[in-house]
Image (cartoon, rainbow, N blue to C red):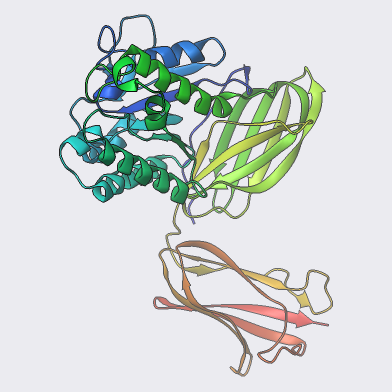
Length: 420
């Protein structure tokens, strides 16, 4: 396997891990743009920004810029557009803005166009997949659409479909349902005091939306652990990734859980490094991931305070290149003792593409002793262990054995000496 590319560098120069800047991308149609509010193009974005700005470091991002010049006006609100449009363009939006959080409110125009609920939900579902294919760590606030004065049953049906979608996705992905429909419509007389027309909220309605979104965002932004993360890097080598990070100061830092993800999969813990408690001195940390996957590998730190409070670092990426050729490395330990506490000899092999393989142990007379694996393996580096037993589970005799790795491309062999 060749040495692979290195990686995204995330640096917060002496910035508190407790309050990193968070990039928020509002995505949707004219309601996201703010049609119907005073000055017409502020919507929920201005009151939401005003709620956030004093306590959190946030940056609204997107290619569109609309407002009154008093707040962060970037967004991706596209009047007249549908869930299908967002599905088709979300990858471009993400590449340009690289958000940490996406607020997605879409479907109003679909209902006006008579699109079936299942089709709208399907488009939104594909949009979510494309968001997490871009970055599995992006948090999504998925909203039911604001109520409308006409054809309201269709809006309610879509809201239920969106809520069901969130329920099916939330166990494996960072998505939260925000019930904008109920936020506005549960109040008697909402049609008059919260709506500018049949589908667009007025300033009151947009303030209600902002309040609901703010309450949902707060747990995602409240990072209370006072640890100043100075740098976090990931460097990929042949078949390992070296993570290195440093802090400028720490207060009650219990330690760091290292979390890993690949290609849209949820993050999972792969290790832990103890912190240094409370210190004003710079501290250096490192961790080696010895079993990365071929392709993109994503990492983040879950920094844990001594009282259990925690916060997440930015996400860094390392790319492990696919092997260029099929190979079988020498076993270790070799010789292998049947009495060793390690309990097995390990063989590492590399394959350049997903293929069928068979790993077999033979004696010097060519007789099969054991079959260790038969089936398909993905491209990359793999390990298989042999504990020195034959096909019936009994211990083999001391001697020299041949390990065979067979693929459609050919066969590789390695010798292993077994001792008592």
